[in-house]
Length: 445
Image (cartoon, rainbow, N blue to C red; front, side, top):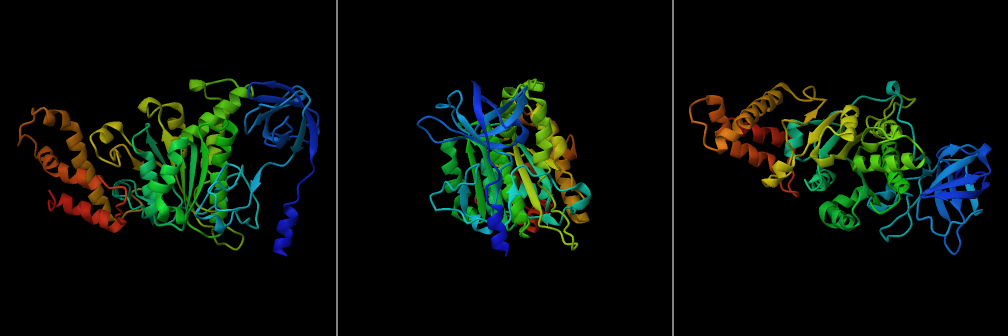
């Protein structure tokens, strides 16, 4: 019966027809069928000597619908037929998708054949669970990365932002989390990624072991803005489907900034007024709708809670400005932030996390008293070093002037070694705290 219901649901809904009235840049104006249209409806535009062009309704102007295409507009002619489907896009993920690489439409791009379809249909643009009807964050999650395990301890169902400029090591950090984090499934969204780096990330950075339990969604930077935005929605839809199968899901997205840029392109084409740094108002409306879909699962009628989606979203800060509009907006939505700095990467310490500027909003509640003391002591030592670093490096500090600074100088090499971690090295939560405690006791100084 379930299979029969799923087959009936897959039957195409009513198709409405319209015509191309005008093409302005990447915006296609359509006439006809307005009574059956809504923002988000899908359409196919018949082209001359080419495959039909997929498009989406992004707005209305007077008596015309405004559509944006998922591909190049070459071949679209005045009066061309438009087949419009009033319903929005949906996808049917299943556990069999683990180990596969798909595009923004849910089509396989790894050459391993068609994807098995799940029974339930998930809309790409779903609403987040209601605040009063979702669980709370669970126990802490072992990420395998020492700096994050100790200084930004993360709970299951928490959402963190990774803020960094280009070339600072975000992708490598994500691959470490994908391989080492203690979870059942990983969903990786590569939004606006460089085409050259996709295979490198999957084959070398993520690796065969990491891919086995992952679903990777790819939309490269050369693809249309609508497709890049949809890849982000697809990432959360797949994560929600795996969550509802009671899997603990780690959702990694690189990057939220490119999602915002795609939404800006769409908004400007539809006639929205630009605001801060050219970003349109819908950018700041869509960001919380996307990011809030991650987190603790909804509470079912029988009282059980669906599996959590722990989200880590990278933010590409413009010109290393961590207060630019998108970074500022995302920081206010998420449950913590991890700051990666170019200066740290330039001196050869990876992952280049500035732990003094990073925070997890579930701390210190998710740590016991001994662990809090270890973190507090380490932060004091690192803060003392950071405050006097310039004087120490130029030789202006005289040993014995301040015992706190003297201790920071003695422990700094060991702490830097603790924060530095090879891409294929994993350290458990307990071992991370134990190692740092031994450093503070002077055993590795």
